[in-house]
Length: 415
Image (cartoon, rainbow, N blue to C red; front, side, top):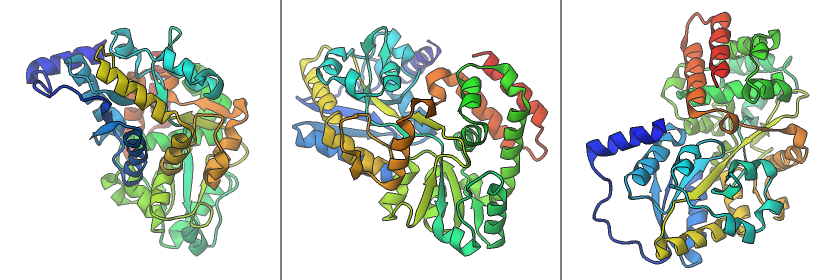
């Protein structure tokens, strides 16, 4: 409600957006999304080309910045203002709750049933796009949220390999630093610090601790010695970044791994799209691992689209074509190969995907390894508060583990 009320207030100030636009043509679909990096743009072109080849007319509306928040705000403003796009992007989780509650999203249960999604799409993702028994989202991918990406030439120059344990982790970073290489490529946004943090939580803390923190909101787990060790690990990592981090976007940091200037980046598997877009080959030019050591957790999330509520037959027809296109077997393979994620359909030939994708596919075969990411179980306000806290810790010259732990516990207790 709060986000929608903010949107209403904004619209009252600036006027209704888009008045006077011509009526939509048949199969014409305006698509709001936030995929703007090189690899993301290449991936969205796969979808657009497929839609156009099927008889559609993709009107692209890419909105950069904020890790998707800017695009979502624009789309919600448009919806509330009475000028909705045909389709817009969201992440899995609770981002849709408010606009579904207010009737702004089209129920596509009939299309999901025709496509047999219940049999093909993982249960966790179906749960995420289903509210009160009705399907509202089009799942396009399954992203691993917490990977590490290593430059193999940089490791070779330093005389080390990808660390197989946490005991070997910091000595590896020390060797990279001694070789004149930036050990860890860090970016400026708080959500990228959150990526590093959740990698530490799932990889060093394990799936049980991750679930207790983010799913169960268990304060006693936050006050445990294990949690404290994770915070100390994050603080220690700060010494392995460089002064340029404050000026970098996430994909700029990926570029440091691609050009072998830095040793490792902690980022979701959308980073792999940047490597592939640069012509690099997994396990030849770069290495990928979602964990270090013995834990086998896989934190998943991803992207979906929603079609906005409409009674316009032309818009409904374009939306139907959009759903059919994105859920086709070939598009699932072609798109995810470029995007760096894995398909949501269980009946596609994943042997066509790369070595990193094969690691992900093997991990998610075991449900015990699967952990839904923050948006599945936490509100946007909670996630924002955690990221503010992580950003403050990262930039504090004298960080306090006790203060961080106390504040973290308060945030999850309030969820």
